[in-house]
Image (tube, rainbow, N blue to C red; front, side, top):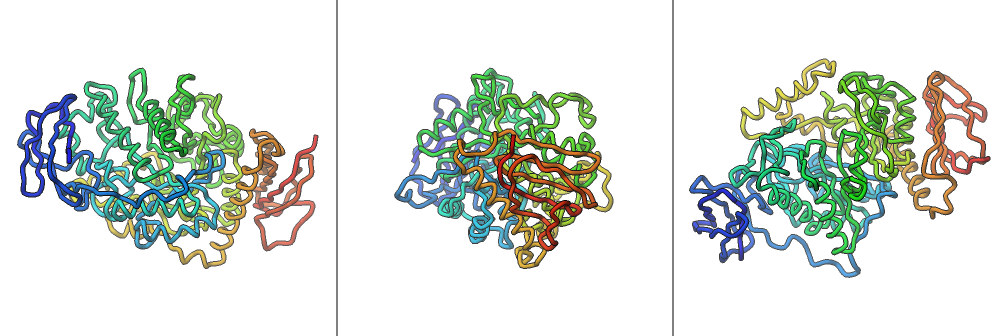
Length: 579
């Protein structure tokens, strides 16, 4: 077996394999090699220039955690099943469901999550998006401080169990996306700097040192990141990746690392004969992320459009702290529904500068929108979901706006039944001083927000335990009613997007009318008309001319009123507009 490691500035590299200490030989490009007799399950580390041994940067398995020995990994799954590879539905037809393995179930494992797949199929989503799995310190966390990018987090299950979970999702018709973090690494257990120039001091992210994507020796750093992405897609059969905070990837070469990654994933997609996608998180409102390289873009498949969330949240909750100060009311909701971006180059009070640009040449299926996600819930001081801030009629309106928008909708775990459990920020750093600094930093994050009360300590076990979903809520009438509303909206959306393009009753661009003073809005898209009375009074709302059949209404227990809409009510019609 050939073991190799990149350490371009090292004078010596030794492999510590069990009780053996084996000197590696230098190879071109800064690599060191050893041909050894080893087998799956053996532990090993590397010693650089005689220093204390540290884990392999490309370790595929860290069963004892980020500070423990790396372990040689054997095959992670059964041979490929007959009948060809699973093929995900196109993003234009996608409904994404974001989940955190550790809090999705009481057990917090892949096996336990697999038992919930019938629920997700019943809801009707098409893609699951798992929050990061790359190994991070301790036994719990969000995963955005990962340090062993090639090794799945042990408390969730072994690599073979992760592979089995993805296979099970495919058997249920569900595609699986993985959230990966390529803008920084966590501080605890981060040994990459021992090996070579993986980081640079020329830039700095909000979370620490920036990755060296354009300095000396950066070619191999880029190769390390791209190899990692391809591993998740090929070896574990993920159907795509969500790239965390790409605005914090600093790269000023002629070919950006995101463009290089996009080309590599497209090549792998062709090799495997199955679709693979890249979805970026970015707060820049920059259409170049999804523009092709020939148009000067990076060629990604889609990106998150946070303005949609911000506009909805500001309108429904009235909050004006932090970035919500940039959003006003129903007019911004209408703009978000039409364009995805609210900020298209105008001045942002929160940022103190202009922000964004017009989303020219951006298709609806290239923007992912949500009313809730891990960031927007978990980065609140007390992790409140919308279900803690809004009443049931408002939650139903939010669901309809999200699921009937022209964009790719994303739901956050438990949103579909109005889960009452919070989703808090939690960590398990083993270094007490680092834990203290994290807790203090958490408090500083809310300097732009007016919050009351103590912020839960991320290090406390109770903070993690409180964030686990309570699945028994589904049997309670209010939660069951909301779940049924979500399920029917998902079914309606899927029925419409699956229609042949030539038989659809209107174009992809939605038609929106609203009255800010009267607080009503109508949305027409794909032959579906959604009518919203956001006000607290009965009022008439004129429907667009056409033939419309009422199929859903949010006030399920009230008598139908033919000439007026009850307060805070959503009506859903299907049909066709007239001339």
